[in-house]
Length: 276
Ligand code: LIP
View 1 (cartoon, rainbow, N blue to C red):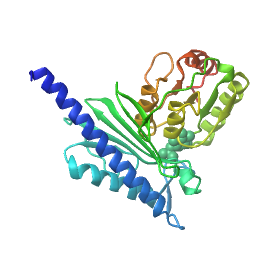
View 2 (view 1 turned 30 degrees about the vertical axis):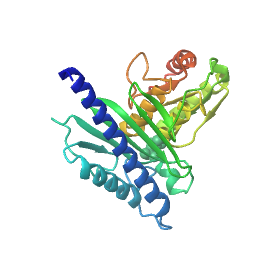
View 3 (view 1 turned 90 degrees about the vertical axis):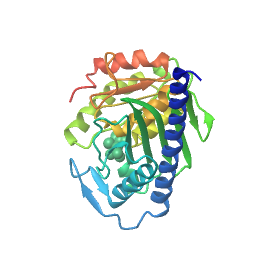
């Protein structure tokens, strides 16, 4: 075996291990969150009085970190709750973790939340795992290899017309930003089939990946909200970008079927959707 093929073989082996570990950690955390949800959630707040974190968020993030570092102790980790933060400098692999994406839904016992885990290698997300414990749906993707729901390949819908597109979106925790985001929705809603606000970016992007939505956009996401599901949507055939060719980020994320992407992008740009 040549050195190059050894390197390729090595990366495929590493990617397979990252996927297997990410799936194990996400499923273990999701089952814990579902089975052990206490009646009395202890609630703290973060950026605003409605940006909540519970003891289950932090416990799930600690469980995920322990599961991953038991196998790969030298990997870096970026988690929403900071329970497992470790410097990335000099480390090839970084795990990007949202222990509960859709925290408010989890708080209200609404079955629309997920565990989101992405594995980034040399700065590029190679593996994405999103586990919806309430519906027992495991979404996975490996860069350049495809996307799956419960092991079955998934693809975006065949929607080609913006006026026929079912579009997901979300709102921030800051009231002024929410008011601005509502203005954008008001400006867009007459040009699309309808709007859905379901409360978890990772599941919105997975819905796009399997044809339950035709597009999704949001301003103000964190990397852990979309790192895994953004790869899943891309590998299912969606375009996932920021505005004007920029990468998806907290400034803006717009994702859609290839034919819908351009018209939706231009409409949102015209509405100033990337500005507060
Ligand atoms: C949520 C996002 C959602 C957004 C919510 C919240 P969290 O993430 O997934 O798209 O609209 O405001 O930010 O806070 O539940 O991890």
